[in-house]
Length: 467
Image (tube, rainbow, N blue to C red):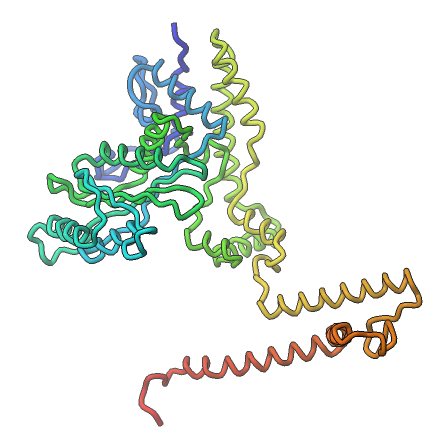
């Protein structure tokens, strides 16, 4: 008899490995008027675990997380998912990047993902749902116009997106051709009744596929991908990669012991450029306010409760796997034990921002970045201090040597070359007491000159009649 988890453990694992299903009143998720009694409402509100079936059948949550079939089959898929998580297999990324409105916008998207107009050595082929490969701009224009005409469908004044664009990616060192084949196979199955185009990009350290899908399918229905759809997309895309021998996983962040950061793409790009985004400063200021008041961040409690649920779920699965007669299940239990021991403590976004601000040299006072001019002055002061320290050290080793202060000479003038003399004069200027003050005054003058036209442009009479 094959091993299978108990219904309670399997449902708890499903709650960790799949997002909770959300229902809205009157939208197919229950009665619009809600429960009749307050007690029933509270019972449903605080009932965290899915309703377990009494006849051994899988709950809807378990089916969403580990697929349908028998309890033994779902247990096997759950064990494989936990093994990949414990091994820290690469996670697939499926993200919606935008929507295109009108044929012109769709054509611009085609040109962007195909790198049209950037030269033959840069342009990449555009794969379509019909099995064609587009490289010519005219063919892309015809396809974009077809999408727009089908989307409008006689509603000339209709407003709405014509297509939706997505990105499917994997970490660096993933085989690009296998990634492209997996993405195309995924699109053929998932969007079999819709038109789509795809292009493989290798311009970054990780390969990724841009996928643009027509919103209106062949039957005239439009779709709006939600969180549940994206979860299903990730699972199917990861399975396509595994079918081609690529280790890939598709799990929520909480299943890996990671707190979701919900970082905007713009903030990530600013950090890559060495800048401090506004969201980091706001988070650091929020953490500082709680520290000043001497109270704990309430988000910390929420994260701690969620972390405790994940640990309890893994602990229950480890106990059941350890009692299995299969040696493979016992090895999996040991692997999971080491995995949960290495799980980091939960950390809120505000605490993370404060920690990064404290450890970064470019961030001071709870997330306030250094002004570029202040940074230049700080570097100059550091250079001056370093020169003074070197002078003192040389003087301690050889008292005969002369300091680098203004007017001092290390060797007779007649024996000093022009290059050494110029170097000495530059050093003397840097070491002088008035150097930093003069530099600061010049910077302040430049700021005043730059502020005057800005303030003039911001006056309330700007753009009005002249006086």
